[in-house]
Length: 419
Image (tube, rainbow, N blue to C red; front, side):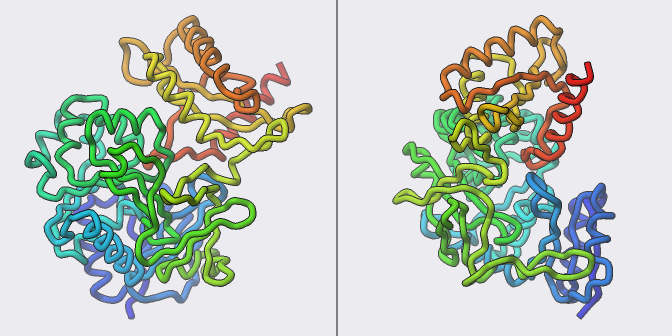
């Protein structure tokens, strides 16, 4: 068995793939991370005796501390095989597909398209992030045949989907994909409605680093027919809820554990069940994700999932054409309610660059309009305060690093108290 190898996003994707493939052929374990996180991964890995073909990738970046999750290559290949069976169930032959990947390879959702191409013997194409922001150029650089794109499969996060849907060329290009998996963050009802109206074969899905990516997916036909949620579990997955409403997952491809100071800390999984930390519902239509339980708040005796409220407010704002570029809801202590939501807002700007902060008067008008929309919500879900945050932006996978923005809010609130 070879020694471990650490690779970062500083390498061009093609070079990264070549080194990854070579390492796996030599039965080596590979750590994959963003260039900015290599010190964190190196510290977690230091002194470890782990070996064998596989990867160590980041997990837990959206809530809580950063964790480094071990996934053997056999688990990744099992995930690809289960996804292949899902494709067959909706009438697609995996061996005739094309893997299109705009997600970073150091995230499990960006790594799995490559693994699927290896397992199914199909082509893999990296889509540069800059092209995903320019739909007209994307359609020219990666043309797809009409109707089904010769089996083109695409994995996106909601932020990328929204950018593509905003341009006619992006919509036309997406329509040529056989399946567009979307996950990593909540899909708002407004964005889902736009995708249906554009006849995009969308498949909302759910997965994690700990599960070697996708464990449930909604078939595009059912999405286009108006169904919501993430569908039924894949063939090698079982799902259930614990008494607190957290989603539990059981599968032979669960991670053996996470690295911490050179030691492998096994996942807590009594009876083989891993607790995801996401609140969920399970019904006849399958899996519905409610939001992070560690992000849910108790407000006036009611449990509120901020992600759901964000999705509703954003959908209403965009349906009215309001220049609301980003919205993030965070909890703040309240002596009467226990906790109340505070809204961070990024103005979409006017004729300037996208996301540029408008003048104070325009921002006040936007916030007043958002407050009007919020009155449609139950009292416990209405943000108590609205704050302008020009730098507000999710990470590269469209996820909110809520700990970072909670720190920002604490600093702002402390400044208000001092003032």
